[in-house]
Image 1 (cartoon, helix red, strand yellow):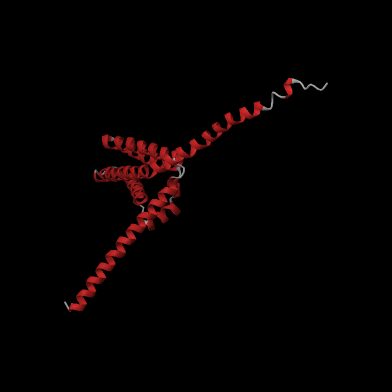
Image 2 (cartoon, helix red, strand yellow):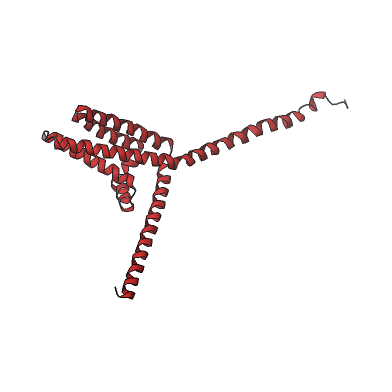
Length: 200
């Protein structure tokens, strides 16, 4: 009666041994995710720059192809489509130049360009208009717009913080431009003061 069964003493060390085995796995699992996110955030500014340059190049090519379409004196419907694609190319240029007054106006009136699906659709519409132009240039430009649409959609979906980082980069560019302008204004003011002081 006074003897205790052997199975009462066995379970005590078992949970203690099991606990350390699970804990390092959970710590390792939580530590890996922030590292991947940090790497993504680190690469994002260079990807945004590459995306901006690609969009500007595609927009410039779109404007050139559409202008050449108008110069060829086609039917009225082709002229209307060419004017539409020129306006679309100018909108993309304004979006990517990141000038402060343009940025606010585009965000208010053309906010769909910040959504991956609507931007993809907009680029495809521009590409389909180029396809309607026919010829080698029109078809090539249509394929280029399709490729740029896919790349833009990938970046917008892959990096959810794209818009926030893009706004930070734009604000830094605004500060640099304002600093350069104020420095130039000060230099001109000093030159004017020196001229008035010397009487020349």
